[in-house]
Image 1: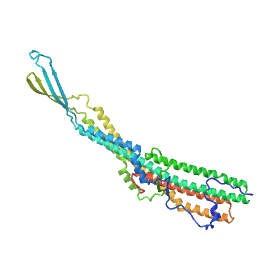
Image 2 (image 1 turned 90 degrees about the horizontal axis):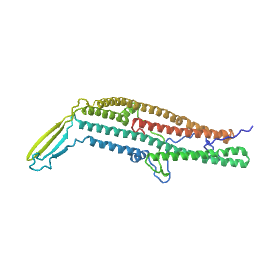
Image 3 (image 1 turned 90 degrees about the vertical axis):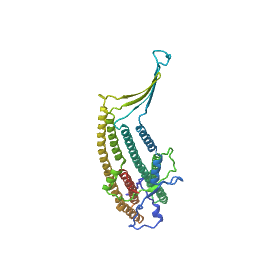
Image 4 (image 1 turned 30 degrees about the vertical axis):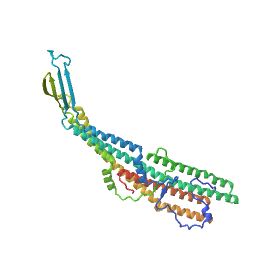
Length: 434
């Protein structure tokens, strides 16, 4: 019984090689390069490194620029908080229209200056609170940038992966076209029937679709990355260059914990919130104290000149700012608990990223240490056997398909390892893949 020939679109390597080159030894192995370098060269643009992309994001990302302007606005509040009370000029007069000899006179004039004097250090406490709010806003902006950097790093890695995947799909398509051409030669020579050839040729559409989808994935990843760089109209000339293989990790989990607790801006923002609320508590207490208003006054009545003084002191029998004091105290306790939660979250983020890194390292190492070479060995053996008539074409093509799938899986493992490193970089807020 003749064995049916059925191919899938995932078959990646060509048959023309064995028809044109000497047979490889069955023990020959092939593997991916030790370092996978992907460069997206689209048009004449100079490829950007990851650091250049991050720098561009810091300069032009509209979200970060908006946050920077908001920080400037908050900082301007320090000026307002530090202002002293303005003095008030008062003046008045009576009986201007009386005649000089009118017994109801003489006319009366007065000019005075009054000013509110704050007690309890209110001005300094307002200034302390405003500075604490500025620090809080600055830390929040730094955390926004941290999150944006993660998004940029991930988009950068995915664009490198998309380019590498596109190159594989291009090679697959070109290789399979040669396979179809070779099958056509066999068909014309009578070594293959028409039905088997049609089955081979029908698989070509799958490879063409794979190539189109890879192109689309690269274009979409380019658009996503450019949008993070503040580009209004994404360009086809945008290019990046870098490696999908990160450097070995040189830090222990404990060192990453220490770095995260020291460097994470969200944790610093939580501490700044505690400081700001503590300043609010002190200000609420100070605002419960009465502030006197002093006034000095000059008076002229007829030919007499006199000086006078006034003082006004609110009697705070009922309103002593009790509600604001209670609110500020509860806000302070709430922020202290939020600080504990933020610290726990920092440790959790590092632990989670570390676990992902360990798993990704194991998977990537598994392909490099065994399965890449093993898939190449099987492919070479099947090619040798097929050329000597000891196996079927379908078996050989299946081996080719397995080799391609293992290489794609290894490439994806590279991506997952790089993404895990970037996640760990963000969790610890330190560069661990220079």
